[in-house]
Length: 144
Image 1 (cartoon, helix red, strand yellow):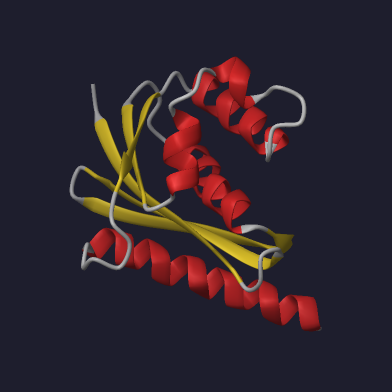
Image 2 (image 1 turned 45 degrees about the vertical axis):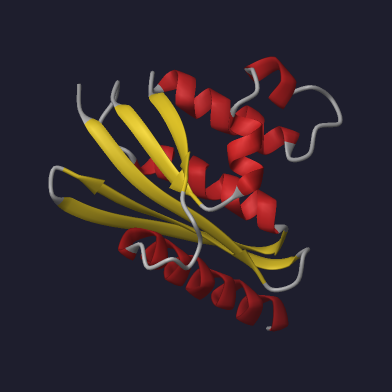
């Protein structure tokens, strides 16, 4: 089975405020990047959008996916069972439902791994850079 390593990050200008997310994927020696933004978001929702965007961008089905993140929010929530994530009133419930649908539809074996932010990890730094760029686009669009 193929293993795909993806570094994800989210960024917000204000919390809530304009936000961006990024996913940097490394597979078979190739690096691909995807990102997006929203005019109104939270840091946590952008982190989760990074995971969702990463899985949506995958072209390989049925693979092991390691999502590297510096988000304590993602790490702590990902360790709960699916029912806990989608219970009424749970923060970002709709995003967790979307994440679970994509994860389960693609039959991905997903594992979240915590990385230290701004510690010199090249891939994590790239994800951070692209998330901040996407956030700046959202910030610009929100003004205009």
